[in-house]
Image (tube, rainbow, N blue to C red; front, side):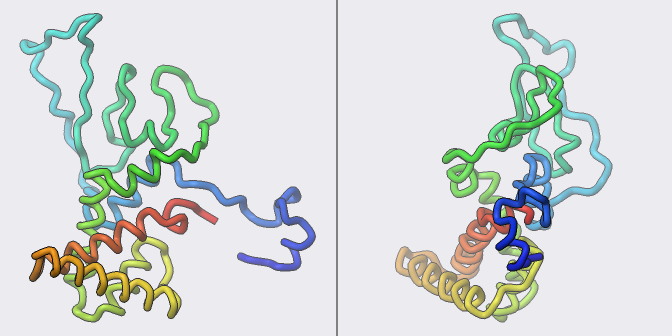
Length: 206
């Protein structure tokens, strides 16, 4: 909660009048994206699809390295020592080779580029877009639902109008590019979903 009087007395939060802003840890960020997209699998996960022992041919110079895609929570992801999970590693997940008492917290360009361009993130954005598009034909209701699913609050008037203009202009560009119909609608709302998922309000906890 914002408190102007406390902020004036202690702008650096030295005396902890508020909770310091922090970024979601790697596992929470991944889980939150899956939850917002509606694709989080809450069923009990089964075993990882390891190859049969008869097919094992790994050596010191050709060790086992694989990443098994999953829509379950990050706590159920396979953990291997030689290769960190690409998403968790990028967002400061723990080093599986050592005991990690305190995690590092970095802010680097690759994280922003990942959120904008990675195929997995695009899949979650599309899931979120289809979720809001299927709920209502009213653009304002869609924007409010998208913000509530990602930011945990409804948008204010300016945010709502900006989002509606963004989707409208994006759709016009898609039509000029020859994309139309349902595909055009989903792509336009998927683009807005990527904006919401990459926003500080989604990634950080105040």
